[in-house]
Image (cartoon, rainbow, N blue to C red; front, side):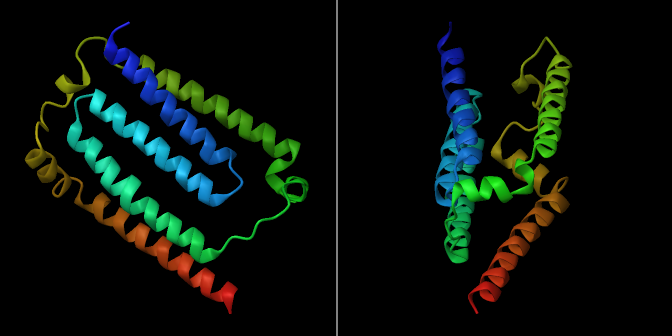
Length: 174
């Protein structure tokens, strides 16, 4: 097994374990820390794909700025700890019907992922397919021309989510 494959499996395992811990944790602070672990695994995958700029952006923007904002929002909301057994009994998603629907959706998502991976071209790598964006300058040009609307909508969505969290926290605290 080549070292690239070994690094891929290592970083993929870190990303998957971090993502599973996000969902499995009951404490939101631990979930935020687990998603940071997942982001570092993704950054390692980007380095393995020879995309160091995207890896650095992944760490600076997501693991740095966005996760700090998530931590502030979680701390601002001051989420109370509740009894886990009581939550399990009272939460509507814990009921067997909802769990079956969730399991069905997970199977459908896995089938869709398998279908999408089967449609990848067998010849040529990712670098050959994305030759049009070869450097940071080209990436910036594409991002701020072709994808400007999506970029701005994403920033507005993040600001609206933060404002909503602040408004909810103020109503709850007063």
